[in-house]
Length: 297
Image (cartoon, rainbow, N blue to C red; front, side, top):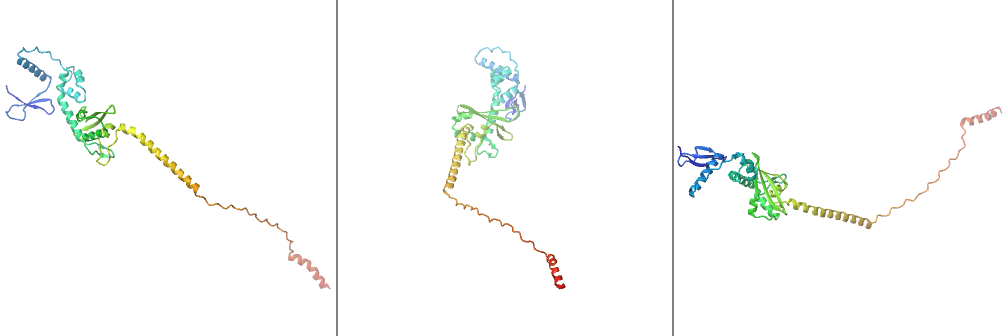
């Protein structure tokens, strides 16, 4: 029989790696982590404890076959389901499911830390001046959210469905209600995007030039008084302008316009008939007899 020494677990956390050479760091043998291995280890641990206490080994309980494989259990835990719900789906105890919870918690922690180091980008405003973790802490202090550093660290959570990006959530109390900000984080591309409006407001900070954006709830309450005051100011300015114009009209006198005097037109002269002129022929005809008479004489 060949003696093997344990090196550790594989990167996918599905196998145990063993080696044969002394002092070697690389493994040469691999075994799968399955339910049979867990049952054997539990039986060995139970017998060892009974032997140390000097008691006879307890009778072995008939092991129930789980309805879900370990890989499926980890997939459900990674998607955000609770240990109790996964245990009911698998038909096993909570302690059996908790054995697969450790690697999932490590993956969540790595995803949360990676998202906190990333920076959120807003359209038309550009990249945030601080990483997500620092931006959230600064904005929560600006909004006077009553939360300690330890509570803020526990308020982060992460979940993932299959090979999709991680969904990062932050839950904090504000004005008597629990507010939830959600982001999407891709660890391979290192891209961070906001899912809701609260996430974009809390996770973004200007680059030292503009003040931090007001919270959504406070913005909704303060927007109405500002608009009303603005309307009043515009109305007052319009009435003032009208009053000044009316005052100028009353003070400045226009020059009196001269009235036009109606002049009587001279009466048209009546046309007088002139006596008709006698033509030369008529005169000649009248004068000829006299000439003849003179010649006869």
